[in-house]
Figure 1: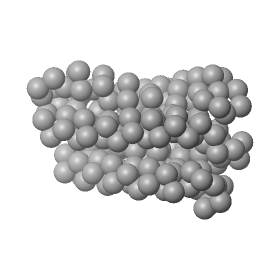
Figure 2: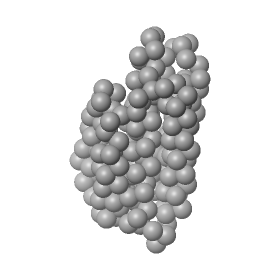
Figure 3: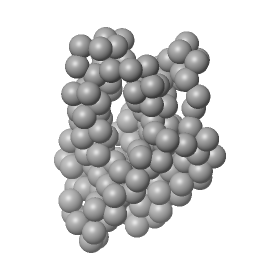
Figure 4: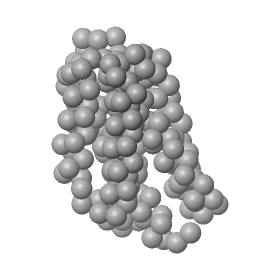
Length: 171
């Protein structure tokens, strides 16, 4: 694998973790501490902030250009989190489950592409993937699939994630 591929991975993963922090910020702005899932959402948000901090450090260390779309992710992530939370706690969890499902798929593809190359990046991705899987599982346990129009909501969010990944890799 070449350096460009590693740089692309670091750029898109940093963007994704930033987007995740914004989604959780939007959810928490609406949910506050009024629901049974607020503590779980806060915990997931803290883990995403830790992931972001590590990718921010890696971007600085490796001199990788971050995505130019970060201002968009700031607004879009917050709006997605807030909008799904406004629908209700189960819709917020549907958002989380859908996003984390796509991130699990994305991180798995990256690990396959990395192979034995770039062990530092591979280790970060593998560790973070486990957290993302735990977030997905927690969201499903909290009733994500009971959200209104779950298949449509989940499918739309997953498609949006795939588009966001492709854009962040390039821009």
